Amino acid sequence: MDAAYKRKRPDADDDGAAGAVDLSSLEGADDVEVLDLRAAKRLLLAFERRLRDNLEARMKHPDDPARFADSEIALHAETDRLRLLAGAPDLFSDLVPLGLASSLSSLLTHDNADLAAAAASLLADLTDSDDPDDLAGLHSLADALVEANALDLLVHNLSRFSEADPDEAEAVHHTLSVVENLLELRPQLADIVCDRTKLLRWLLARLKAREFDANKQYASEILAILLQDSPANQKRLGNINGVDGLLQAVAMYKSRDPKTSDEEEMLENLFDCLCCVLMPMENKERFVKAEGVELMIIIMKQKKLAYSSAIRTLDFAMTRFPPACERFVDVLGLKTAFAAFMDSCEQEKQKRELSGSTRRTGGITKGSRRIRLLGKFVENECEKIDRLMEFYTRYSERVKAETERLDSLDLDDLEMDEDERYNRKLEAGLYTLQLIALILGHIWHSGNSQMRTRIELLLRQNKLTKDDVKDILEEYHDNIGDLDGPEEKERAQGRTKEIIASLSL
Image (tube, rainbow, N blue to C red; front, side, top):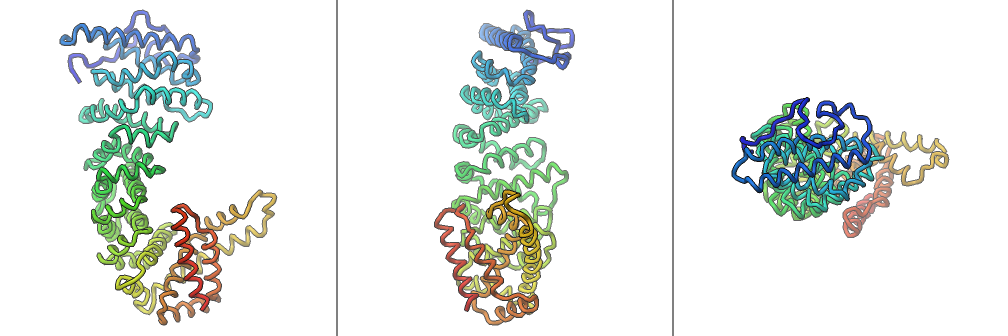
């Protein structure tokens, strides 16, 4: 930013603009209770006049900042006055045809970075509202901003601003705020902005910085939003070495915990991004090649805050991808995983570990790796099967209690159909119970007589039979969805049928 014409904030008695709308001084803006369309139009016209005057002054005296410094200050004052519009989003639909979006987009390109920053700050205010009644006006403004290439300009300015300057660091934060607001208003922009701009590259580079600050946290939030429901963006990030970049970002916490709650939230965002980006198969392969499996095991061994997130990441990596399962066994991940399995006490942690155990059991289908995996269940007189049965009885009782509760209700009065009833049971613990049943089924299907004998003994001790396990698996089979595609659904149902058949022998 050129020090010769860096903006100055006007004093309370300096209107800074002859002919400006006389609604209030900057400091007195809060006193204005009602902004009608006529006053709003005058505000916009005053701003556009100051913008035009400044651009003309710059063109006439490009090498003499002193000749256009006053017009710069006046333009900034008029930009600040436009904040009054944030209180009247119902007027946006009328102001957009008059140039509201195009004029503010133009200000984003201003040579003075301070004015470009002011435009970002203003847009952050104008696009932010939680009131449903404001949506029509906000949608009108958002669509017009996209049409005026504001998204492209905002992303360009992220690289233009220098975060070494506190004011420009704040401008980066405001810019990310505008992007977030637009994505919330028009979720389909997630694919568009990543296709048209270098936003993903900027976010990835920002997250690889070692020092934590508010903008790094915000970058993690934006990236998580962009990846959450967008297979296209998941693939785009993978294509620009994003898997390795995210691994570098989380590796900073492999042996230490975040220092603040904000930093903790950022770390969780990073793992959310990593799990999202592991949805496409090609990114699972990149994860394995980048030694992501090894990193997650290291994080698990350290038992820091990222412990459960590392387990969750492994679950995503190994789902429907045997090479990741094989790498997990090859690098001695079983020892770490089963130690966690035996020590787990928190309900959510149990779910993740059980889910991971199911993926590993199902993903390793043959050879010495499967023998090593199944051998873990034989160790120490089948103690891990004892642990499984402990979980099975615990969750079976929870599901039974919920089923009895639902049976006692008049579901017609509650307008609860069978799908809702099933979801209630899932929430009560049926999903975890199904995972346990799958693991027990895989163990039984292996044909190992020692493990089969142990399972039958434990079932009898708990007044259960193999038919109880089969019932759980049959309900699971009938409710397997096609989220991963019809072919994967068919394969999952086929594997479950085989397990059920083996339990019937």
